[in-house]
Image (tube, rainbow, N blue to C red; front, side, top):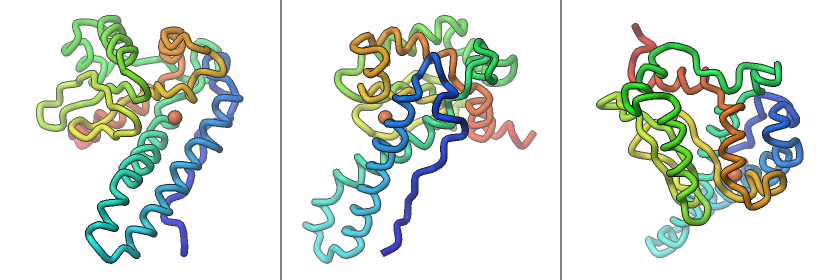
Length: 206
Ligand SMILES: [Fe+2]
């Protein structure tokens, strides 16, 4: 049977996010962790297609949710990171003036307030999960949100997602999640977030 889902290429080299995220983390995270979600999602979908009773289909729900979410979230995550401007490697970490910055300042008072709220919410996740900046597609208001495990963000359109699973930081930051969350601002791809914001709010059509 052919595999429906496949591992997307990283849009930069494995060492491109150094010194903020090490090559070792990026290689393992992409080639091993994300690949495992892809493989398990394909297996679960194939099993679901062959299932013939409600009970068999119900038994596959958690595998579909966990591995499907893992694939969705990591596919977003790679794109919402970029080599750091502060290292002269790219535009990571730079939020230019524009609609998204205006929306962030409008919702949080300042970019610094947003960062603080995002960090506090994400640090507060018990166990594994994701911290998000998302936009409500109806009100166009940006919000901080968190999801547990590999649950995808469903009620908002995700603009920036940060993986707070230990596999995302432990080899470099050990138990100090706060240092990882401080460093990651240097490699956030705000151009990608701006693009998603424009698509979600319809401003891309103007
Ligand atoms: Fe991850």
